[in-house]
Image (cartoon, rainbow, N blue to C red; front, side, top):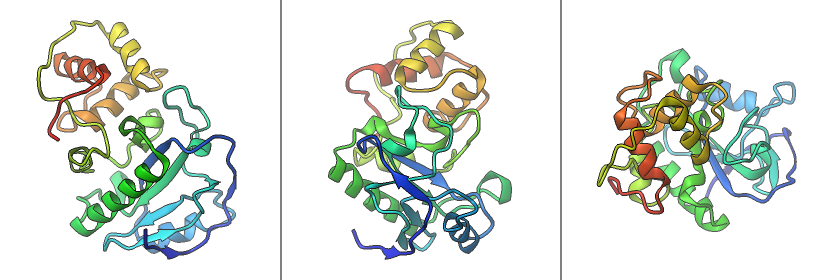
Length: 229
């Protein structure tokens, strides 16, 4: 994987094997501002890869080191997500500074990078996640405009199930138990439901569990969810 180098001092040693890829948006006004912060020792944040809007990929931290991108996070029983993951920052001003579509060159670069990392570390589709998936109480990135469907069609991420859907008629408590089984931290139920919707039903993010959410989640818990891939 060809990429530029812009080393960050913000890393330490891993204590877990790599089993996840976490996608973020930078959430800052400019790419330069974001890159500076990710390399600033005082900021104490970093990532492994930085993908600019023109598709340029820059490596900040070697894969074998633990970058500081996830913060307080949880996914499928893992609480030290930084130790278990590769962090990818995608340049986008985010919800605070004018959230916008991700350019085609950038999406193609992300796809190539995720494909490379997923193959190299034998990462499952269910462990290619967004920052909002692992930290639903705090984060919204990479957000509802990120084209997860492009990754799922290439089997780089789980699809949004669309076929053979059945409503299990769960109440909210049962739905949250299923959501926790799938991988989410459900300590804040509404935040967890919104994170799930942002990822798998982005056209309506209201924090309300409904029949469509139930059907999608049930299908995702099956061995082979069928979607738009």
